[in-house]
Structure formats: structure tokens, C-alpha cells
Length: 309
Image (cartoon, rainbow, N blue to C red):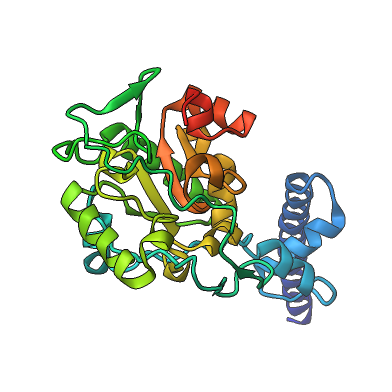
């Protein structure tokens, strides 16, 4: 009986040893497979194994957090609710914005250096041919529609917003959004009648002499061509129709890239005697890709490019 018991104990021990060896074989096989999957990097394999069984790596917490932390993307300006933007986003719909008055020093609302924008005494407040009657047909020079203080438009000229210009703006706005700027064309086409209302309002506010430096008389406005786009940045309406827009990052981006989409800054700084208007960092005119590229690279106004006053 005693021998039988000894035999039974040895048999149990043998089975236990066999099971232990089998389990050890599985573990070794798993370790070898793990090493192979991690390019035979022992340290990396150990970390992976610890992650699988829920263990924390004493010195690797910060590195792991860094590896799994998503890369931050540039902050995009949130779109307002659809109901709030429906009216201003409708092509050709004018969102009324009163330009800053050149007769008073204007703070730039925190953009740029914080300097004041003062009226330029070199601006020719006139430039109009007094007594000139509006033409029956618009003026084209080198195939380009021209509207300025010497070349007005017929009162009946009402093309609406230009579709090519709108398409070009939408492409520009889409690219700007990738950089983090949400652009808005807050004023495009204006009818003769609407321009009359605006101009008379500005004259009542600032007087005719001052109004003539920043607002066109009825029939003389580029907005009546449907090719002029006043551009600003959504949620930064304090810079709409203000020289401060040119000092914002969005304004700088538009100034540097608009020509790639066929737009030129119509009233650049330092060209007031040529254009007859004060510098407007927000006012852009669609002329097409080739012409816009040449005007931008040569630092010209539309008048200089066309060879007219």
C-alpha cells in the first residue's frame, strides 16, 4: 500500500512538471513572437507587454502621453449659426457697414501696433469732372471695365454680382480657412440707388469733401460693376471697412494672396493721388488671374495698369 502511494505521488509530480513545461513553452513562444513584432527591441517589447496587462511604466508616463497626444491644429474661427449668417452670406447681398471717417483719428481696435489712423492730407478730395453727365454705356479699357472719378457708369447699369468674381472669392476663402481665417465678403454689388443712399448719408455725416475721399458718388462706384468685394473676417466685424483690417493677420493674408485668385487691392496705400480715394485695405477688385498677377508684382493701381487717370 505504501509503495502504491509513493507511485501515485510521483505520478502527480510528473504531470505537474509536464504542465509547467508546457506553460513555460507557451510563454517563451509568446515572448519570442513579441520581440519579433517589435523589431527585437527588448525594452520596447517590455513596455508593450506592460501596457497589455495594465501596468504603468515608471519612467515612461510622460513619453507615452506625448506619443498619444493629438497634434494641435490651428484654431479655426467658428462659423456663426446658419440663421445669423443667412442674410450676409447670400451672394450679392450687401451687409451695410459704415466706413471709418477720415476726418477723425481712428484707433485700430487692437490690431497691429495700436497706432492711430489719421487722414492723409495728400488725398485729392476732388478728382471729379464737375457737371459731367453719366454715360449711356460703361467704359472698357483693354477689355477691363473701369469705374472711377473720371469714368462713371450709366445709372441703369445693373449687372448684379459677377459670378466669376464670386467663384474666385469662394476659392480664396476656402484656402484661407485652411490657414485659420474665416473670410466674409460683407459688401459686393450695390445698385445705383443704394449707392445714392450711402453717399448722401456720408455727406450728411462728414461733409462732401471728406466723403469724396472714401465713398464714390452715385454712378462712380466700383461696387456697381459687381466686381468689387469688401472683405473682412467673420467674428472680427470691428475691422470691417476699417484700415485696421490691413494690420490683422487675416488682412495681411488677403493682401498677399488675393492676386492668386484674380483680385487686386483697388486702393493701395501711397496711391491716393492716383486712385482719388484713401487707402482701403478691405476693398478688392476682380480683374482675372493674369492681370491681377501683373498688377500685384509691379505694385500698380488699376489706373496705372490701364494707362488712364
